[in-house]
Image 1 (tube, rainbow, N blue to C red):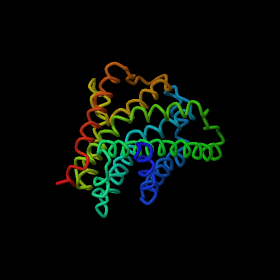
Image 2: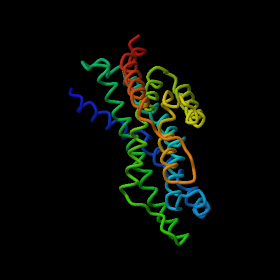
Image 3: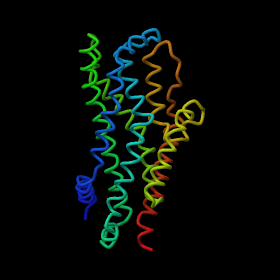
Image 4: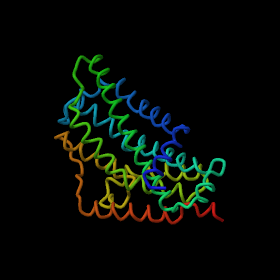
Length: 256
């Protein structure tokens, strides 16, 4: 079976799960406070940021800090559990397929789920911006090129984090423990982005990246900016290390 065919099989499996529903509900919940408190964006003009930029960036900061990582933690565990339900993993391992290839196919699906949720967030942003524009009699809608650029930045910054979450789901067999550790790892990201070693903590990457963008938009705020060195080399090492261990450990518990 080719790698692309294996990825296609993995996509078919998630259709029967609740992953997509969870991602959608989380995205809707994310933008409700922004819509209800749209008038507060006018108060931020003193910080040198326009109401429409503040509406967008505050929503995406909330997503990058907790909602998106938390959804990915849950989605990663559910994705891993699709094989363990009814011992389906044993059937897959019995096939003449490399376990590393199977592991990477599932990680590709996880990346696709991340793209999907970020896409949902962009869609809900435009819905929320349209509603806020109507209620506040002010245009909160930004140009798509800018919005998609910021969304792409969050996704790219999230890849090492997703690799770490996938490592947790592979190495920790008990779902509640895997979810608990994953969620607990998100919280310190707020503290880590204020340290010089933030680049060593992949869970802080998406939040740090969008916070840096906030500093560019708010001229009166001073936020730390992204330095590609040493961030990119460290991020690559973390991603490769997490995926390497995941591929090695995948299916070991079931083979015992």
